[in-house]
Length: 83
Image 1 (tube, rainbow, N blue to C red):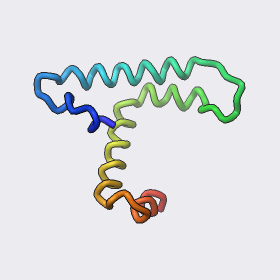
Image 2: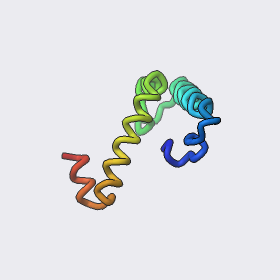
Image 3: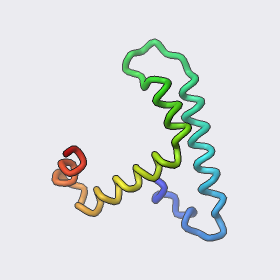
């Protein structure tokens, strides 16, 4: 999660977020090009979509985490996210 990277909050390190996103996109794209025969592996098209939509996915995960933490992260939070 982005919140785990305290350097992102520093004004002088604005480029750190850009680098984080570009590296995340690159990693998912590279993973999407790896061929596999195992059925339990994530399909390549999912990994490619994560590469192209990395910023939105990072934002969405941050929102889910904030909501989970707001509710204490217990069973009640799990039910809120699933329902």
